[in-house]
Amino acid sequence: MMNILAQHGDKVAEAASVATQLGNHDTWAGHLLFLIVDIGIVAMFVTIMWCLYRVVRGPQLVDRAIASDTLSLQVVGLAVLLTIRVQTLFYFDAVLIMSIMGFASTIAFAQYIARRGRPV
Image 1 (tube, rainbow, N blue to C red):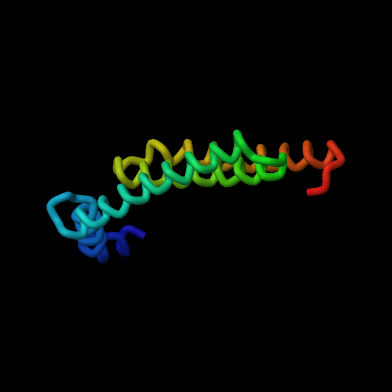
Image 2: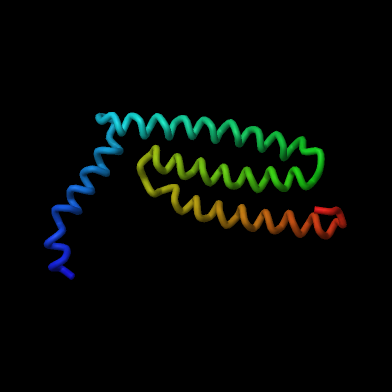
């Protein structure tokens, strides 16, 4: 195992330096990456506001359930974009927790709608 690592150590170091340069603001790729991530953060924020509006003002309970499920996915996407933007894995644990909570809330909404006797 150590022989393989010793043979390919320079390739690993080169790949790590390329990854570091992509996250650097000094290169055009770094500027483009952060520009796209910033646009994605703004887009996620706008769609989160639309889903919050639909959760509050939804005409039916099913609309509110779908909006809350979409909202949980968008919050997970926002956390992933923030992880890329800040360049840390700090938010990655939060992404996993939010995914599990989003799934559980979707199941809870489905059971609530089914027990009320309304068609889904």
